Length: 486
Image (tube, rainbow, N blue to C red; front, side, top):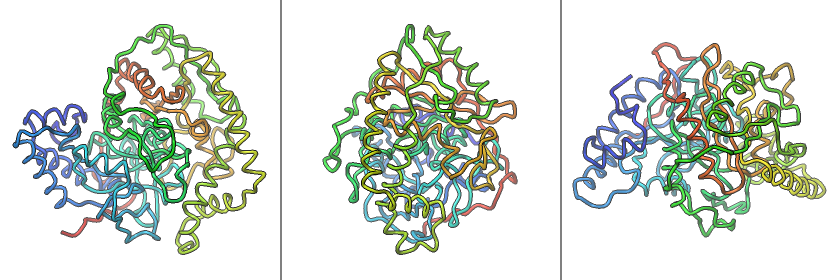
């Protein structure tokens, strides 16, 4: 482990830069040194622009010296998820079809991070087009878990989770349709947050009304999640959703009192979602943390009986709309799971879409019935522990065969179908030392209160402080890091 800079939270590091205790260039140097140290093991960073980052860090230090007002993430080094467009930097989405693509403009989440003072350094690995919750592709290879480098880091924000866990950076941007922020957070012992609909808007030329996919943060503390949200939340005129939440909400106090908070816990979401027994036994013991804080924990669940239908058809439609044209141009180099999901979307009938809309309406009614009785829903985040990184996905979970590449992700997918804000928090380790995450969900647009409850759990446990020991020679495969030419 290098010096103490990599261990600092985003709040701590930006405060130190603001006070001139650490320069942006020093923070960047530590970040790049850490990439050089751990990336040969975990293969999480796939594109790096050290020269461009050094210029940005130099500009940040000049701004510090000028005495000007500094943005909230001033001087903070960060790689970005390779599905999020970064202007002037190759953004491949993990696909051979986009191996040379360089966007002209930043996606909104990247633009807001840059405006907040982030020093962009490169891109982190993803599964092809973010499809699936295990990070591998034919362009860059497989990202592995800092806690066990022969195992999966999760996905699709697996590269982000791995660099945050490895102390390369304190926070990172990700995205989540079927668990892509939450499952890698669970696998890598970090915090992952899927916000409410359009809290961080996602402008689209194809479907400005899309609601299933989200962008959001990963960090090693809930406090840093709130900091990230405070600079990326806020409405955008290109997205015709409700205004969502004012960014200032995320600058309010994280303190909370959990006495009397009613928590519904479900091991299987009431629909028989299979989860490894060791995960359930561990999480059921962790529920005592909430009870110790004065909360009331009971086994209860929203009615998820139609959540699989809502998620599966909505995802398929979104895949067909967004990726159908790319498949037509370059389908021969795109993985079969993407073909399957796009083709499912193209095969949907008007009746399918009518039934999906009706099912979503009933699902929402069940969700509101649940929140009429409870404040918080707790559940397993991942159904399995981190698995062999050479697999495409687990072939079975707790003895139940996986028929598609999505089946082992249902614990996250069914909550995606509700549209609720969902938080994954580190909840300890298995007997073999593998991270386990707890998934918490609250009602629509109660995002800040959800973060408060997650932080209350975090303060009692402190699991995210347990850092991985990433040793050279432990990699499952060779790194594929590409450096941007000067």
